[in-house]
Image (cartoon, rainbow, N blue to C red; front, side, top):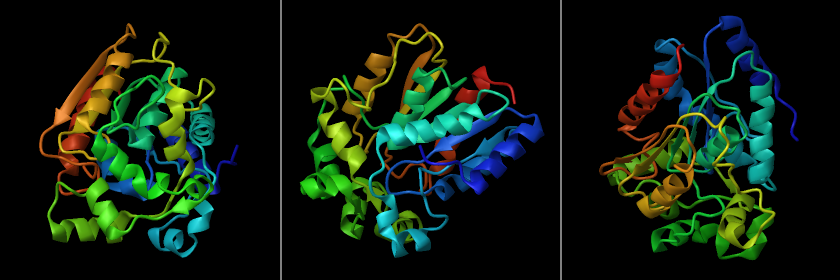
Length: 282
């Protein structure tokens, strides 16, 4: 397990000192914790304390990430989930957890471990038992899956690949701006893990959907998402609704996988905040 960084420890200490209910944000592949900065302001204005830990060895900036892409290699879903659980274990109060893409998968893993008071999984990557494999999802994952050696590498997306996987629902100018502002290389391992999850009984890509301590869960998905199409989100919801707790799903019209960072981010943030506020008092 990667050590908690000085920056992360600072956020933990700040959250504990505030006495406010914490919200932990979990980013997905090809993004950094800074992709949540605007969301954090919204939640803090609503009275919460916020933390945005990185995946193990995440650089601080996009510039650093692109200068040393190899730092992202060899990160598995289990390692990432364990790292976030280690951060949460140091909080004085159990947090709400919000994750996007593979971060949405990790958020569900943490909820299944009883680590979250309320969870929002946005465009969440599939876990074991989620069966649909839409063509657009396979095409989005192709930059990684087409070369088995990528399992152990960090893989950057070209602009064209990013536009298809993330930015298909925004115009060309915004797509280029999002790519330049946010895109970083990502580890290939989680993609291969997700692709083989239903063939591997020992996979790390599994969620304890029936844990009574899971807490309320909202799954949110962009209507035009290529990376996590509605069929995947709906199948995840059907697995999760076996839990006796609150389980809901929302389809956000005309939005793609970039819905947490593009011009419409505030709508998605407000929907997430409203869900958390129903169950958690700051």
